[in-house]
Image 1 (cartoon, one colour):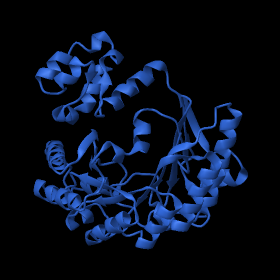
Image 2 (tube, rainbow, N blue to C red; image 1 turned 30 degrees about the vertical axis):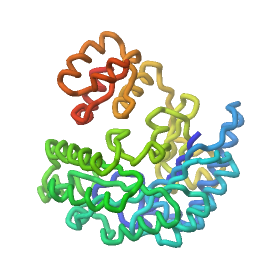
Image 3 (cartoon, one colour; image 1 turned 90 degrees about the horizontal axis):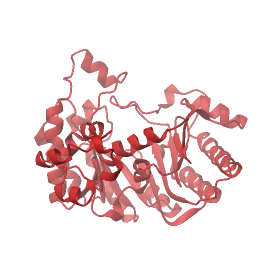
Image 4 (tube, one colour; image 1 turned 135 degrees about the vertical axis):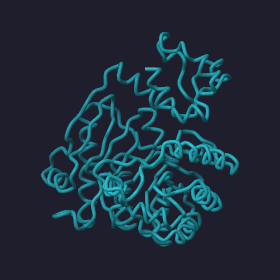
Length: 377
């Protein structure tokens, strides 16, 4: 089983972000100091629920502390949370333990302390090497600090993943290529590159609506994706999911793969989602509501759903077509697979893989992965 721990705090809200995160000024009655106890209380609650449900005990294969910016809590509280997780559920030998951070919220000592506590991997929000792009995104870190943080993490023995965003208004192909060049020169183990999505209600969406910034261009997004895949391939990275590349399978994000393959995980924290035994649920969203429930010893869950067999099959296709191994032809209804030969001729799926009974998207196919999934469901 996997464990996700949501830390809902950020120093500053980025203009493009619609995640369930809050600055100190947006919260009352909830603090960095009080949150670890609330998260650990849910772990105890989770263990009790699993036991009462008659599910066999399973140690954790992955732990992911995300947010938000988990390192705003400090290394010691994060180590305490991880220790509680291990004592509550158990941690398998070789388990992947990831902590997200930003370049301006972690020190060399923090990273050494996290590694000593059992963290194996750090996911660093770099986003761009271009100061102008960072300003548009309302990112506050100095890009010149990123190599220091990567070096500190590598010196501590941690795997390093960099998160990048492309397609920011005003960003050019040349600027994006420069970001890729900077990111790869530090030799991280893993890179994620996501096309910017303008989410309604964000500050960025407001600026675009007022005409202060142009709307991101889909064609430019596609060119940037192709450039990223070509550049990263030449630099020794291999794609394993549409937006993710790694130097080897040993450096894939095992925790994220558990989401894409519908394995079991428990989500800790406000707004966190869980999936165990075919049941999916999500917690109350606001940290103060979450804190009240945990203090009262009540369930933090807000709602739940059980996917039908048809919905589960559709989800397998939607997620599977985005992955390097693709999906089995046998998992697609015959009336939905009549276009496969045509897609090979159009260069959207791999012909060799189809002969082996699998549907695997080519680079061009990845650009229209959602279209392929719709056609197959």
